[in-house]
Length: 251
Length: 306
Image (cartoon, rainbow over all chains, first blue to last red; front, side, top):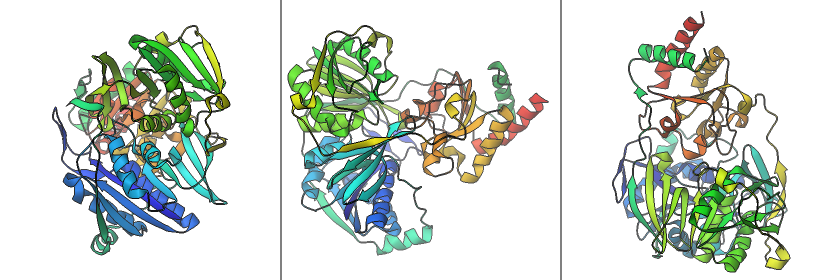
C-alpha cells in the first residue's frame, strides 16, 4: 500500500505569540499535533498492510526549515521518504493550499493520503476535505483507527461524546486523523539526531493559486477574563483556594 | 436573503447546536434547515427539507449541493462538529465558495458577510470579510438555542433518488462508548488534567487531590492521546460533558474543543500561562505551576476538613 501523510507546522502556543492587526508573529513553530497523529496512523497502517509511507511537509518560505525536525522525527519512526513542499506564498486559505497540493499529488498513485483533521490556524477551511474534492477522492475526517479488509479500508471515526462510527471506504481515499490509535511513539534524542543527519529530504515548489472571496480584516486578542486572577506563593494561593472551595460548598 | 442550515443529527436525533444555528440564521434572513435522516423535526423553528438518507455521511456534501442549487442561499451554516465539518469543507471546495471555520459570530455587511473566528487554541480572534454566498462552520455555544426552537414551518421530504446522488462510502454502524469505570458526566466533582501536568507520573497528584475532594480524575485530549488516562475520562467535544458542581482544571489551556465539554456550575483553573483561554470560563483562576501548588493545596484541604 502506498501511503502519504501531510505534515504542517503551526505556531507553538506554549511560547508567546505576537498579535498584530495584519498578522500573527509566533516565537517558534512546531509540528501540527493532529498531523503528527496522521503520520503515526500512516505508520500503523504500513505495519498492518505493508507498503511505504511518504511524509509530505507543507511549508512556505518563512517556515521552510521549521519542518526539518518533524520530518526527521517521522523518518526515525519508520517513514520511507521525506518531501518538503514549499508553497509559493503564505496563505491562510486551505482551499488554495489544497488546489496547489492536488496538482502535485494527483499522479503519485497514493492509495491513502492522511492529514490531521484540523490545524490551530485553520480559520478558512480544512485541508483534508478540500484536498479530497480537488482530487475527486472520498474523504472521512475524525479518524481514530484504520484497518484493511479485502482491499477496502475500514475506518473508525469519532462522532463526539465517546460515540464512534464505522465506515468502509474504497481506495484511493483521503483520511483526516483526529488521533492515532496508539500514543505517539517516543523517539530518544540520540535517534532523532541521527535521523536529522541521515534523512534525505526532497524539495518541491508548489504553486498556490490566488482565489478571491475571503479576506482577513484584522487579528486581535479576545476580551480578558472578567475574573481577577490569583497570584502569589503556593501557601497563600492554597489558602485562598480553600476559601473558594468552601464558597461553592465543596468543603 | 435565504439562509440554509445543515442540521446536526446523531443517532437520529437533532442536536442542540442545530437550534443555535437556526436562531442565528433567522437574524440573517429566511431560513431553511436541511435534515439528513428521519429525525423528529417538529421543534425546528424554520422550513425544513428532510432527505431520507440514513445518518449524515461525509459524502452528503452532494445533498447540500443539490439543495443549494434549489434554494440559492446566501449563507450556509454548519456546526463545528466531527460530522458536519467533513461535509462543509467538501461542499465549499466543490462549489468554490469562501468558508470560515471556528466561527463565533456572523453579520451581513454590504454584499457579503463579516465573520469572527476563534483560533490559535482560543488565543486569537480574527475578523473575516466573505463574499456571498459563503459557508460558515460555527462553534457550539456561540448563539442561544431558544430562538431556533419553535414550531416547524413547511416540511419537504426528498429521497436520494430524487436528488440523484450516491457515493462509495458505506456506513457500517455505531460503536458505543466502552462501559466506563466511572461516568465523569455524572460526577459532582471532577479534577481534570491537561498538558501542564507534565508527566504521567504526576497524574497521581491529581488523583490524590480528587480523593480529598471526593471527586474523580478526568483529562483533556493530549493526556488521553498520550495514554495517561483511559478514553472514558476525556472531557470535550470528542469525550464527555461535565455538568456537576465543580470542575477543577489543572494545566489545561482551554481550547475550544475542550471547553465545549465543560458545563459544570463552578470552574476553577490553575495554569502557569496567565493568557490561557480556560480562565475565560472560570469562576476562579490561579496563575501558578500546578506541580508546586497542588501538593500544598492537598495539605490545606486536609487541614480544613480536620
